[in-house]
Length: 144
Image (cartoon, rainbow, N blue to C red; front, side):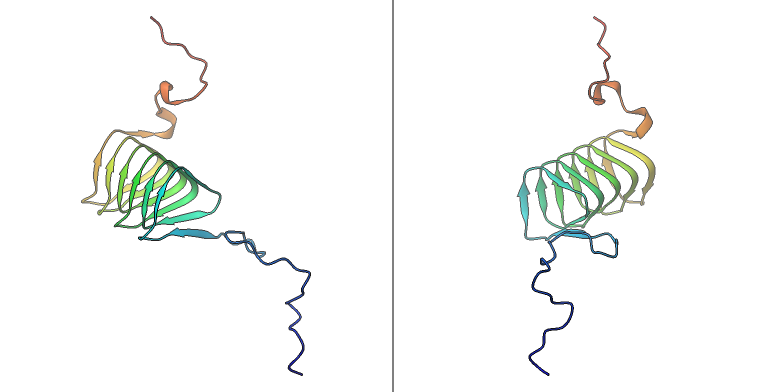
């Protein structure tokens, strides 16, 4: 009675990987805590929640930034909700800049929401209007 293993704990089944998508198909997320500092670029296929300090570029599906966090690098995401400090360019389809956010850098977006009180020191441009110099391998040479 007590010695039997439950049916779902088969010894041949591998343990679930951290950050892996559950079998049901719902999205997962990764959290970088307030006591964590990362020096280097981050690429995540999952959603990312950052409360710590990042010194490097971030590329992810969705980004949520906590109030006390700081990012020193470029941010590229499908959606981003920023509440801390960002020093670097931001590119997102859906971008929400909360009132506690402090941004130093250019912002490229498809849909943009800015709360009253947010501070942005940079230029805003819809994604379709990025400068040609920012598009890699555009095949356009500058005239002399």
